[in-house]
Image (cartoon, rainbow, N blue to C red; front, side, top):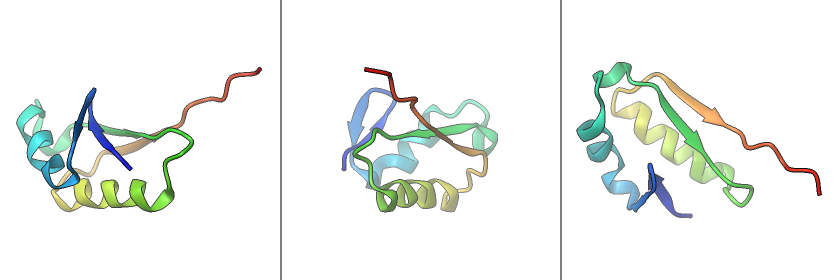
Length: 69
């Protein structure tokens, strides 16, 4: 799957460097991970693992509510 930081698609290899460049409070920065319904568990966990291994510990998952049709 594709990885986005804010609204820009990036390779997963660049994720940590880009996070470090925009973090205002360093490793205490709250990082939210959001996926759509096609996001597989493995991809989400891979992203979380990279962020955590880089020293960020305040990581949250955001779920999107399904809209009634």
